[in-house]
Length: 312
Image (cartoon, rainbow, N blue to C red):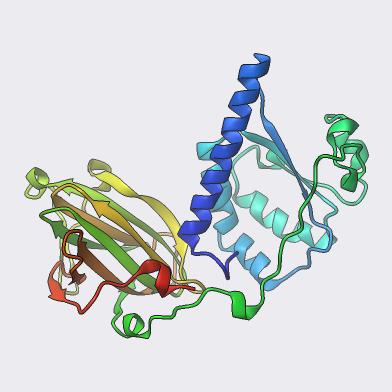
């Protein structure tokens, strides 16, 4: 998935999946009048160790996604998650992840080798376990993951856009904040590449608050940071990786005011992060676009970039 989808897309699809599961659980509870939940069984047969897996575990991404989905937003929906037919090497990243996770992680994520069936039968009826895992349920069909070739992976295609990217460097535990002043309805869109994981979000500040909230960027000098807790989040605060697949997205700015794009390097203690980005404000009526620079100024651009055409 890291070679196929933007990080924001991957997280969005995860939330859609969990919302679908939540609706199914709610339907079951209405039907039976009893509390319900889901159990996931993940078959890791043939899953080979690779560098990406170790990086995903050790750089905090596994902790972030587990915290975001399993602990913060859907704490009672999926419990537990059973991983069966694991290889011995899985225990190494598992121990690393367990040390960084909240209490109860080992109860939510359980590991089993090939001798897992008798353990599952302690809590699950054999009629509810698929035949492929030694059970008697023929209706449940497990689909294998598809492997994509390098040619099928997403990549940047708009060379003019790539040549126009603006570069910013963010020190460890620091952030950059870019303000875009909007007077009438427009689409705010962005495209960026990063050399590591960064936190990204967009916040809205009404016109009447512009003089009361301190914090602007003037040239390359960053003044006091704005207090995001006092502003409305209009694009979710997410941890994104835009090194393999570049990030591109947009929001509709339907209210006049100041929109703050916040890019944060809080996950890093030592390393600086370099972000190459382009931000545009597209007028909905005329379709004309203005380039938004990191100092809050605008300049003319020949045409707006189309997000779906930037990445194939």
